[in-house]
Length: 379
Image 1 (cartoon, helix red, strand yellow):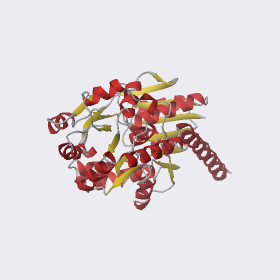
Image 2 (spheres, helix red, strand yellow):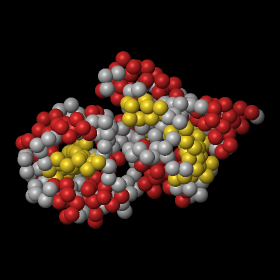
Image 3 (cartoon, one colour):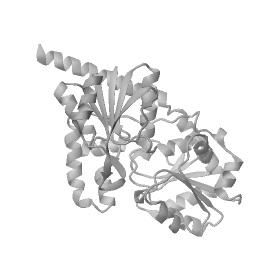
Image 4 (tube, one colour):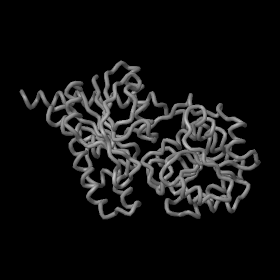
């Protein structure tokens, strides 16, 4: 197959979309499919033998840390030169429109995947007046696709309630060779705890308001023996550093490779307080590293966090219940061990190989159905 991928974000940015795309590009290369990636400028010229076509980008008004490349004739020219069998647009809001238009103009099958709750994002950032317009805009784009992929059942049901059609789950996997308890390191634990005894809590991801990391401060105040490691970066870092001043909190910035794997494996409990995760890849990485997860009972984590088996869930807007769930695990070694075993079992059934094999089968099925439709209409 010849697959053209168009994304609104890629390297050097690091987030769930970028990590998923990296695994997908590697999988396409291993299976000898030809691919091209269109993305905002700043990325390398190639990734996993896939050529990358960069396009000039500007800061997104609702979230200046995100740079978006507008749709362009140059993007359509790049697609024309590549001659794709299928176009996959990821989170299409800007550059992805070039792929939507090209697919329609040249009668090429289009797959779209939904990754971010933009209407909810606008609400949380004080742009609620635009959330309805954004929702209609999303629907208009996804209506053009032969297949719309969702990261979790909760997202699928939400989109279905908004009138989206041709929906299917594209779940997420975890690299169990990369994220494993084998990476536990006393040196890393000392780095994250300052060498002091006590439980180590962990958060990994973008540092922004909607992640609700400020909910962790009362837990540290109530349990001063706890240390907290916050891995990642983002627009709220300065605010959070001030918020956690006087506690045993370490901000590591971005970690990658063995360092990230070691940070996961050296902690005791992973926290996902956000209520708006469309999947929550970091939760699976934590489970693969042997950590129980405390997560909001909403969004993507409901697909893999099973209350009492591999973690604990809390009512999404109940900060008190969140704190009690954390405390229940920290001071109950038997429960912690039970949830740890369950977390490892969950990760065992979530390989990227199986997830991406199913995606390639969806690509092939979409191309086949499109071919039959075209033949029927031209017969």
